[in-house]
Amino acid sequence: MSYALRGKAGRSVKIELVRSGQGEREAIIAVPITNSAADILRYRAHERKTRENAKFEAMDKYGLDIGYIHLRDMSGASAEDAFARNFFPNAGKVSEP
Image (tube, rainbow, N blue to C red; front, side, top):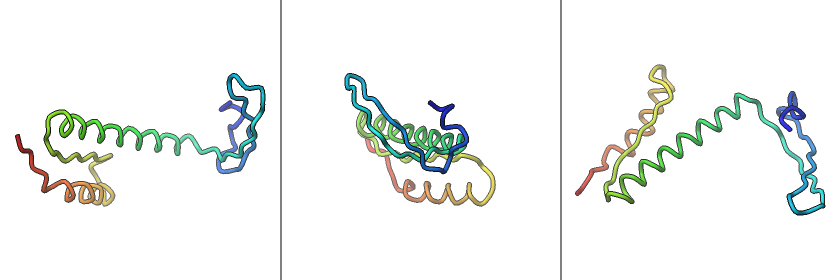
């Protein structure tokens, strides 16, 4: 399937689906994304999952309120902005036994 969509990023394409157990075809319109856009989405999903796991481990499992900060890189204005965006909302969190 991915081979058939190669070179079509950003352009609407019609895809016909056949759901398992059903003989009917269903047509949908999709807009494929580039590999680099897919990489960004996978990375964001990883960030979210990690943040959720940290919250679960701390709060739900142990009753602690923790802050979690993830920085993609450590240089430039975007890294400083990401740090400020993530640090200050988490700065007041205190663990209580």
